[in-house]
Each structure stands twice: as C-alpha cells, then as structure tokens.
Image (cartoon, rainbow, N blue to C red; front, top):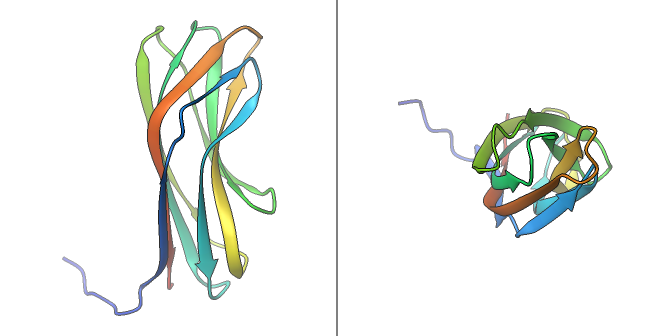
Amino acid sequence: MGIFQPGLLIDFDCNGVLPNSLTGNATVTLATVSLTIESSSNTVWLTAYATWSASNTSNDVKFTFVRDDGKELCSATDHPASVDTFTTAFTCCDKAPLTGTHSYQLQATGVGPNKNTTFTFTTGDLTGAVINT
C-alpha cells in the first residue's frame, strides 16, 4: 500500500453513459464530466467503459476522450466479432490540462465502409479525477 498524500485528489466527477446509437460514420457523445483544474501541473485521469452492440461486423467503433477545447486526448478502437453485446473500457491522462473548469466527453464514432452499420450503446460510465501531481 502506498503512502497517502493529503490533497492528492482535487476534483472528481462520474456520469453514466446515456443510451444512444449511431449509424455509419457518425459521432455521438455518450457521457460528459466537468472538472476544476487548479494548476497546469495537475493531471486529469479519465476512465470509461461502454456496453454496446452492432447491427453487423463490417465497421469498427472508435471511443475518444475529448476536452472542451476540441482536443482529442486519446482513443480506443474496437471491432464487433459478432452481432452480440460487447464492453469496451479504457483510461487516459491529460498531462497538460487547461486551468479552470472544463468538461471532458466520451465520444463514439463509427469507422468503416458500411454506412448502414448501427451501433447501440446501452450502459457505461465516464469518470474524471483531477490529481495534484
């Protein structure tokens, strides 16, 4: 077990993924968190998972963490092996955050040639923590 540092956690927010869907190469916002960053030396730690299904196996789905200034921080792409239900989880750090109160989004985008592929998102969470580093 590590040594506890008082004041290590500055802010925290958690919001559920709202049921949503996208078709083709569209992009949808699945969840948003709002965090207050005190210093540009802070680190914003983002984690998310989303449960989803696809109407066919032609396209991939790309999950992206996006800061409110439009900066894409990182992404993860998943491929449906069947028309079953899947869960994708990933984490990312914003090591150069903007100071003040900012929002971070979990977005999903269809990737691939089939404009008729529909992705359906049913549940999940997006969490954000501001760490004093």
